[in-house]
Image (cartoon, rainbow, N blue to C red; front, top):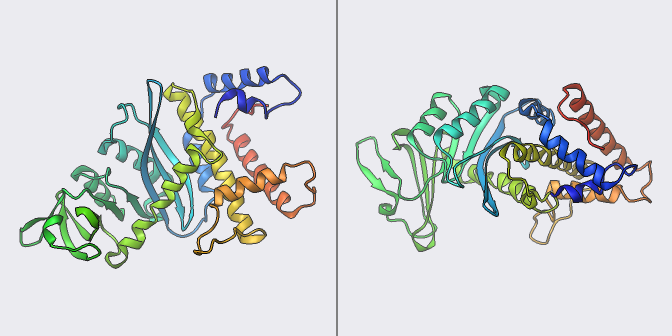
Length: 330
């Protein structure tokens, strides 16, 4: 995601250097309303039913600049979009409970508690303050814990998961157990080499493994944003304010491609399946591939998929213009 490369694909009526200058002006001068962008993303999702929030952090280095992003995705099933994010200024360290709470407070204000069905996170997202906030807000959650966290039973006994005596593949469930001073449900599965999948939750004890597995949607989101056509990690930006804008633009492009891929898969051009039954491409990659095909010179203007894409793109453009979210470049 380098400006000189992007400039080659903008206004053909001017020199690429002029396009690049306009891009630079955008990142230097324009203020984005991230709450309105989040509201736009939510309009791409179903208006009814519970939504799942997935929380994760990604980082990379560019020279001496360390980029550290805490991000929340929102969606249902396999359809998940970046909703809100923050760049952390802690030299690639883990997020704090305060960081996570601040991010989820925004999501709570945007969605309302009634629409949040589940909050899912990995081993970084632990601690009494964090778990207490989630339970106080009555948000169901599943978090994977590091194996050094201990269980406290109702009778006061304290036990490490390594002391459960589980062999690889065996599972232990506990419907009422305390971790980090908060009562909840525990699901532990022993892996090879003394490792464990240790889940702490407040919802669906018999389905915790399946529910936690939905966390892969945010992993897939990060993989796509940082590479696979969106190339966020290739940026040379160092300023956190500009980086946050770039994440917004790339996330918007990702949401558009994912929406196109999902709509095409459901209506006209389904994603092929591999021999193992899994889809050959993600929705976002499918959408990106289709958009590249549709921009070829020989594409028929009457292609139904092209009309679908134009309708979606025009809708997004109207939303951006109505809320004055972006200064259009090119």
